[in-house]
Image 1 (tube, rainbow, N blue to C red):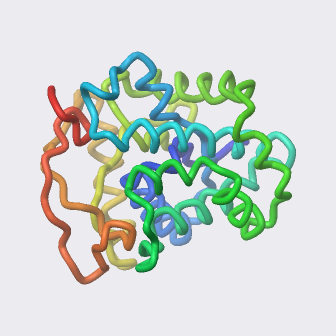
Image 2 (image 1 turned 135 degrees about the vertical axis):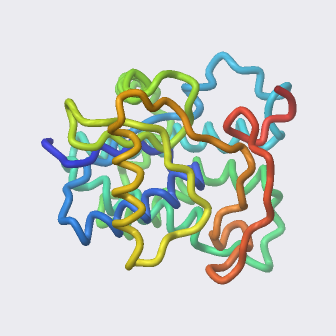
Length: 245
């Protein structure tokens, strides 16, 4: 698929989801085509000791993300690349734009584990207009070869010390970058302006990095942060809420 933007996402990354919503704003105003591609946080961290480096729920969350990417990979293989945009939209809406049920007794760990199950995946597939049998791919590790290949493809564009999302604008020769990591969705009127600034900076060949590890919790219902509230600031050193450097 020849697209204006290749957007590499892991469905369980809140910052990838926030950035994807912004990219959809830009897409609508600029009439860009977007190819939604895969990058797995679980595969990126395959050699990492999760117990030593991450909060306890991270491994479950990243593993659920990989399982959902298997479903997405099968959906793409059987229903075309155009199936991924509505599937990712449905996944992100349920994971991040839906507040936790007040009567739920599940812990954060259990909630993250749930995202990698048929119970979670099948209603989302139905919402995206896709067959429920695609959920069979949750346990099918054969799809990991394709997901790893696309993860490696994304990292080859930016280097390895990054997370999600990765954006490749005007591929194959255009600029690529990690992020931008944003915690708030820009207003429709300023979405394109922000995009132009990001691309202009990335196009300067001498530019490598502009970063701060202090991040606001994203304005997402899953975090209890509504659109009119500024999320609590946290230090995401190393690109995540690691327990040690």
